[in-house]
Image (cartoon, rainbow, N blue to C red; front, side, top):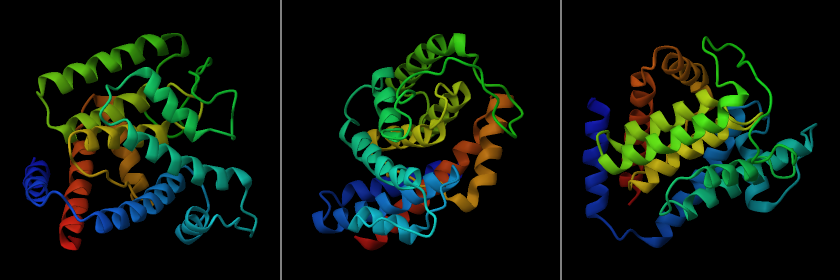
Length: 245
């Protein structure tokens, strides 16, 4: 794919400039925390604006205008989950790590289900495919980890392909009652960062295209739409990063 080739070349340019200026890196990281948190939560229905998200994260401000406590918690939790993912990218991906990410996403929101696999079957509204039955979640999650470990070890696929497929396979299992989308996008960025790429942001304006790509993968076992979307986002992230260095 052209986007993957371009992303690879841009990453090589970025690698040649390392070590990067610490002040610039910190500024870019803070901007990413705000924008990624806003978009990932907005995709799931959070109504806080990007400016309100920024105020909560940077100033600890409680926003009024009918915004709920849950929406505030989703902002803080997502920021903390991003930081956790960044701190564990040198570790092997395990179910324990995935449960920890999910626990942070739902911390203080749904304590009973935070980090716990669902015990009932669910239907994803608007999707053309079924997700894993609850009695098979443990089995499918074990298989997901085996697939991922083998994919990383054998390097048969590009890291962007692995990251996209990891996200898709995870959300098609849909192991938790809530928070699967946010967790899946964090897992995608876990793999991108582990491989030395930049984390990407799926914007709320692209939600329909994103859902279509996920549904296509779930129905047809064909990940090309999602891979191309993620690769394009990676190209954009790398180009912006290189411009600011």
